[in-house]
Amino acid sequence: MSSFAELNIFNQIIKLPEVKVKDYQFIDGFGLVLTLEKIDKKSACPRCGKKSERLHQNHEYLVRDLPHAEQDVFLRVNRRQLKCDRCKKPFSEEFDFIEKTRTYTKRLAQKIITEVVESDIKNVAERNGLSEREVETILKEQFSDLKLDKPIGLKKLGIDEIAWVKGHKNYCAVLVDLETRKPIDILEKRTQDGLKEKLRSIFNSNKSEVVSLLKLTHWLKKAATYFPDSCGTIIRWFAEIIPYFKNRTTQGAVEGINNKLKLIKRKGFGFRNFDNFRLRSLLSFHF
Ligand SMILES: [Zn+2]
Image (tube, rainbow, N blue to C red):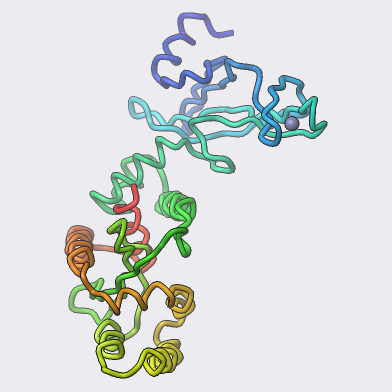
């Protein structure tokens, strides 16, 4: 059994006020495993808000945390299922420092994202004792948590294009929320087709709105061939693209974003693929 003084040192290291360290173990070739328990035994039912401490089931699992003094650190967490006395249904308790269903702490994800934005995936993986695949998984999961797929409240959408690998014919379209001045998505393209110019020329022509819409629809159909995965995205955002082309007063936001993307591109040689570039770019704006 570990002494109180030892456990207290670990409590001070992990600095997670919600829990205390119950036990620890150094495992060769693996790292330091800290067993945690929640200090407050009661949790509020997410349905009715009533607090409960009636145990329904234990659910222990390992969560990766920030490395400490060259050691990989894992937290053994028991996310208990408690039963609500009012609803008569079980629910899982939550921890402030872990996102539901994730196997790493929020602060580790934050660290990884910050480092990836400054460096590249390979280096970050090595520095944190993770595989490149694990880093990519963290980025992807964090990204999906952002729920950027047609964000609620998007009113004006801007669009621009950049080449994401210098000297290569790899182009992408950048979709920008002009109100928050953040990119919402970066779409891969096969050729430099001048998406922006095409769309603009459609809206700049003196044709009526109806004719413009017909032309745009026609164009989108053709675009499906070289935007294999993302034509749907543009169609989903159709309603927001239109006001942008009718009233282009916020071009500065789009240009500012493009300059930042160019910087990310220049610093991070070795994007293994477009997805990495996309994830890294979007995360750098949203975190
Ligand atoms: Zn309840």
